[in-house]
Amino acid sequence: MEDYDLLICGAGPVGSVIANRAAEELGWKVLVVEKRHHVAGNCFDEFHQSGVMIHRYGPHYFRTNNEELLSYLSRFTDWVPGNYIVKSCTRGELFPFPINLLTLEQFFKRSFSAEEAEAFLREKAIKIETPQNSEEFVLSRVGREMYEAFYKGYTEKQWGVSPSELDPSVCGRIPIRYNRDCRYVDHKHQLTPKLGFTELFRRMLDVPRVKVLLNSNFLEISRSIQPKFATVFTGPIDEYFGFRFGKLPWRSLHFDFVGYNEKFRQPCVQINYPNDYLYTRTVEIKHVTHQDCPNTVISYEYSRAEGDPYYPVPAKPNEQLFQRYWQLAQEEERSRSVYFVGRLATYRYYNTDQVIEEAFKTFDKIKARHKAA
Ligand code: UDP
Image 1 (cartoon, rainbow, N blue to C red):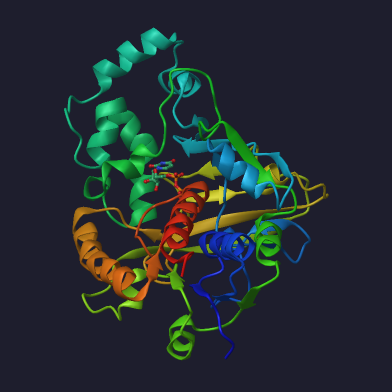
Image 2: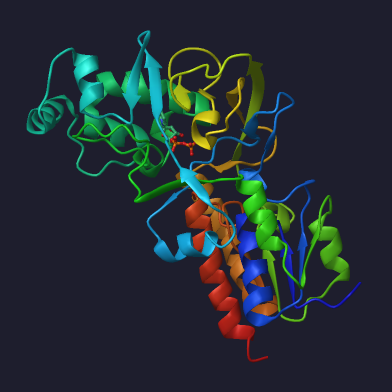
């Protein structure tokens, strides 16, 4: 095996960003080991057999408030506007979601000014000073009726447990708005890579001194390669340590992709089904990619416990177990320069921009510690 300065497990957003910066800024030789047959991690997009671009591992709605991050990514891609509109199908009707004034008006069949809606929901909300879990969080914001219509069933399907067992931050990801803004998220920049995420990360890795090994097992390869400076691990932290304290719970997904011979099948990119069907949501990513074609594909998304890890499960006992692994990880960083970063390695429910921010921080840490060496 050749000599490498940096060894990276995983060619997802974190691995790609750190590989690119180490090669370009430090002139390091980097080996990226990826177990799947492709780069881009769960951002991977590809063309369905019918020619429609799909997000293979679930929709990625890229957004950020970070100008530096956006300008870095813009070196590898042009963008199209995000157009992230989601509706929730409950009580047999489609409602704007996240909840905003339009949702309230449709749901309670009356009109509201922002002040009237705030006063109305204050009445409906259950008084809970400091919500301890996602159920309490939602009840304390919108009350029981809307909790049961929009959140309870969806969260049970998505996580396999009651919202009362999940950290408040899970349902707290979703804003509640006292205006008529129907966009899914609030961020200043809501954009999608024009040629897709796979192409963006492919370009990021396509630089001198970076080698990517696909279909390869990192734990095996790392036995025979000792990088000169550091290792970056972006896989599941419990797997790295041989599950020695037991398995961390992960939530996985299954997708059925179905093609239709019509330009669009549903009115917006995502429809959530809190109370009907076994799937959580249907996604027609064409609304976001703006692909010009006569047909379309809908992804029916099912949540499950088994399979590839997609989501950490933010709950107290899981966090305690994670912290035991994290102690080991910190020791591994100190003694062997192995850096744990990303959704799977830090058991954090991060969005794509957030993992890239984490990648930047880790790169800066590695650079500060090893550059002079
Ligand atoms: N959620 C919900 N009802 C919805 C959409 C989301 O109760 O219609 C809750 C659910 O627990 C979900 C969480 O809010 O897991 C975060 O939703 P988001 O859409 O951000 O999830 P992601 O797209 O990351 O799967």
